[in-house]
Image (cartoon, rainbow, N blue to C red; front, side, top):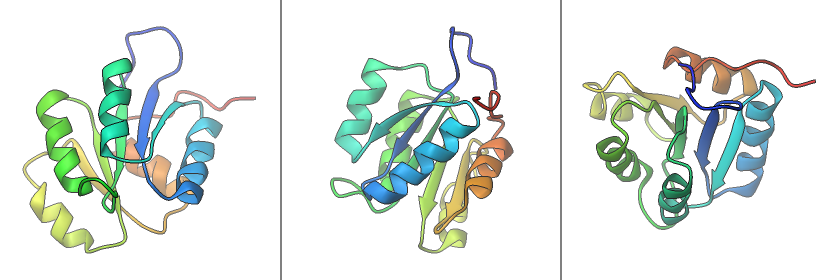
Length: 133
């Protein structure tokens, strides 16, 4: 998926665990993504209002202010074509079943590696722009 706006493709990561979020941000920036960050659902909603043109959204299931799958469903209603990746340490099968009808929603099992994260985005059609030097 290519961003029709100038600059690198933006990815929004919604993760309340700071170390996990920092790891994901580093992994995404290393391959050329611009990364927007949110620690919860309300921050994510505000970030999308400020930067509505994102290439993908990564949502943690265990957010403090709203379940991640609920946030993903709300985002899907607003951003109909944006790929959403749900990161969870819970049952992958349950999440895949819940969102089976939407091929633009993927599931990433925690803990994950940088290559798993980039691969999961790629499987949703979001290719890394290019490595930063």
